[in-house]
Length: 327
Length: 235
Image 1: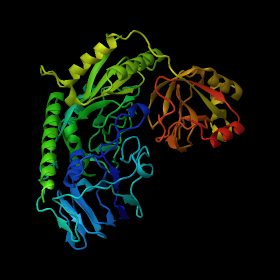
Image 2: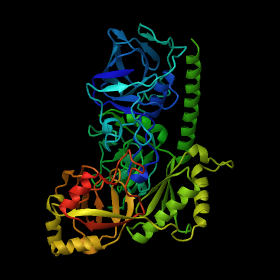
Image 3: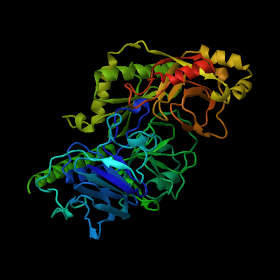
């Protein structure tokens, strides 16, 4: 079983839960930028082992399925077609052998996930099939997909609720994206950063209220925020220490940088805030030119929201699995 | 040793242990000792040592207190208990000898660095190989070691124009630090030589030749030896 890449899209790469546990060797986690959307795509095809999916960015790829397959698309809104037939998002869909799936430009959000029943079965590197584009780790040294690539699909039992067939056939139901995709551009919860109190007064006010703009110069490593420059009361020289996704750094230029999935594991810029983990997928979905506002939050609130989301996600994944068990 | 550690909750799943604010081999030795102890006593944590701090990543759902206390508070208590029993440095660090071909095409900045330091090239090599280094941390790229112990006279500013492609294995000086580029990478440090050893191989176990806390010595080799070792693809 395999899938051929006809057109790679703008930036498409294999991603799973990432590569935790190796930061002490200088290896970051990488992994899906919008974790819940990736998990739900897998759930909708009945995958239960954290299989790798394709993360598409802004413009999706075109792919040919050499054999019949079951797929699901989640995340950013985009047009998807096989021939003339539109393929709905946030549900499972069976495709006959030879189907060419064409994914278009994203109209809302910037990252979509394509999961396939059985998962994309490339060799794991340090326990993960994620492509770390920056550190060049993963399938084919972590590079983005190219036209001509052939991706193997893992073996999987057929699903009672979504048997393979010779017609394009979506499930008769889909999940509501509303809880999982931020359609409103809500403010992101920002926890206190180690050096946030060293910002001057105007910068503190800007940080908690002003609209920043996602720079074009953003990628899986970091989102750069345009629109306002922030200043510390006095320059601060720090020695390097471990860094994290979600950290809002302030380099000497004054342009804040939000570290994302492929953040380097060490760095030495002042940390002016930490974006709540539960809001990181929402940041990952903002497009260059989109606005970002922050609101002051606390670690307790962030932990409570994270636990609540994990519970809700766990319940939904279980409910999807049950529906797929029945034809 | 736990009494003077600062704790900072960085994120939902991250607690930073701060031992100090300086680049200092004694501070770093305490970081490594704490990392070794915590890996042994609390293996469910991910420990990420740096110069003077140790980052712990954990699953917050597994550290919620029955009394309603947050996971960071509980983890901090567990860390204090684990480190409280710890005297001074426990394990003897490994020593790694890194063969280096200095100068020529392998170390294109060697002559400039020697001139900057007011040393003959041979004297610079002698000083660089005489010192004993410690791996303070790995970072920047997979397997990139930040080494402590550079002879202060060999400190030299970074290049004004960073290179887009520093060859893999390049041994370099940047400010008061010395390090080794594991892969072809962009970089601004001054290149004084190159090792034929492969510092990082994701398919090997362990993938990184060096680990934080290791002792490192450099050994000068000539071009013939470099080619021999490179052909053998040694680890």
